[in-house]
Image (cartoon, rainbow, N blue to C red; front, side, top):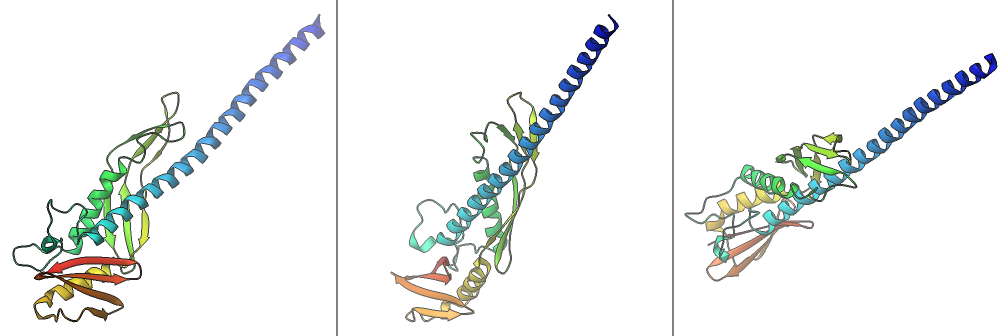
Length: 223
């Protein structure tokens, strides 16, 4: 009888330790999986940020300083200009415009969730700053990844990226060029200053100017 009781006690202990062990191991694998998912989600968020900011930059370059130009733009109102009555943009204006464009684009990044998680997010706050050879993009972007049990498994708060860009050099050259635009010989169609190439094209009474360096360019106009 004693041996039977001892056997039952040992069996109970084995079952108890087994349950605790599997719970601990199971919890470990859950944490391991969530850690992997969090790393992948952070990578996806950074890629989305890069794509949105780069798209905004490309629109600014192609549209003379704007991500969303005014409706019915004529050739003579191609964004950044020195014409009388048209407000000149500053580099800070461009940074704010790209930041706003990026903020709105980020809202679509996780609309459909992420690999089994529903994503709760507040509107991102984005800051863009141009350096000599880069565009720095920093965010305060709170993302909560909700699992199947409707619990937040992990969160992301900040995603930052750095995009190689010579835009600051192009923009600086555009500012200098436009300040001298009334004295520019428009018949001379090609220049190169400070590693920035300028191509001038006459359209009617206006001059369309493309500033380029490598694969990047910036378009503007003056009349």
